[in-house]
Image (tube, rainbow, N blue to C red; front, side, top):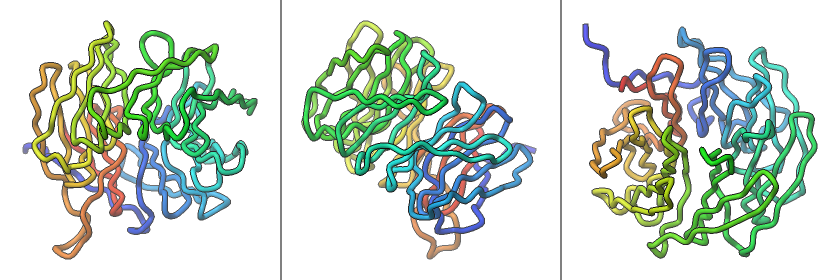
Length: 300
């Protein structure tokens, strides 16, 4: 029997709001529940376990696997970095009030690197909680997602500055303006060949930066589709979510775009899927966090 394109795993609380998702060291998928102030574990057998945080209004957003076999995530609303082990032990690191951490990734130096949307800084924390913040050379840039590049540096999007940023592990920052005004980049991911892929939520485009520094922007069919998160695939392409149209898309290195609608999380009156984060699982499938109340597994 042919495997269906999608399998839906509804979350126990349909308004919890799955947002970020990543593969964990335990063979499970881990997702943030932004509206419930919780983290969800989706096991290989489909079993779901919810781990509530100490603050329901903490707003957990982006999540990543750390160098210490734990999961690390940003708590945007109460300005903290959270940590949870595969067996559910939680801890947190307090940041400057009002900083608004959002994107987070494991760096090549064994630390976690994150963006501070409201203060316009890039943060770094060691696994034992020593925090450093690096100022950006532009105000109001709204740094969003961040990823580790193949060049040993960290790359991030500057949503309000229409630019990409690069920071070395020593803290040296350089900015690369994008060709399109109003691009408003959000998601960013590094491919296995050193290519950087990013989503231009404002322009309805997917961008690509080659290791040589060439920038290309690929318009999507619907300029208002609101591409949000991206993940590179082993074949050199990029998958992305269209938050505005409830679709999942893929783009090849030469710019060919394909897509498919994501499934509804309920009946005909159910809200739009609202896809955000996406990640490949240990089984090779692609998992998408649907803010409307489910994790979608896509056989790719």
